Image (cartoon, rainbow, N blue to C red; front, side, top):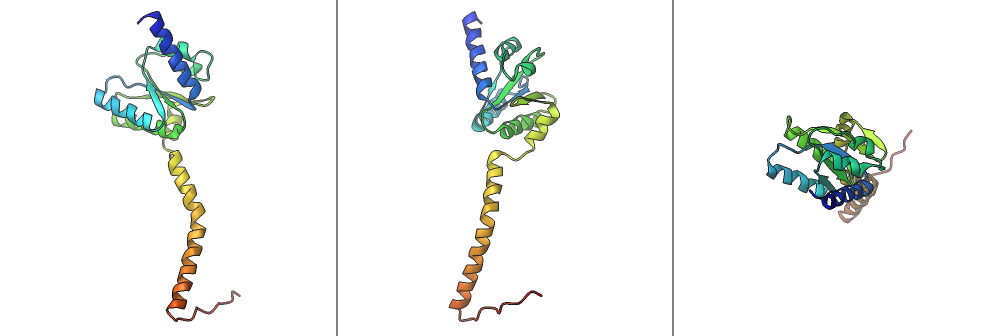
Length: 173
């Protein structure tokens, strides 16, 4: 790799670090290429990116960024997953890969903003619902009272159309 190519890789990785909300350190070496491509695709669909390069280039790219401590002094094969929007979704994909390829893929740690994460904390983050799941739960919570009110009004309308007298109101004592 020429000096210019190394500089291009370093600047690309630095840009990804600066743009990301979270960074997860793992490895993907040793798994079938089809599975590696599938994992990368899932990360891309979660608005993230997976980078694999030399450890020294990761360290150079991270200098002066929030991920500097995580990416310095790396040993062995390393891959970095960047999460640009939904950190929990990318963590879930990395964790699923680690579970699927138990002895091959490992989670080495991560960064969530300025907060350094241990392996256990990355796994805990992966178990959280994704952003879309949380938004769906919030929407269902907001819609529940409105839906219940609409059902009551519809039931009253059906009673009046059917000729039945509405049920008498009871006093609570």
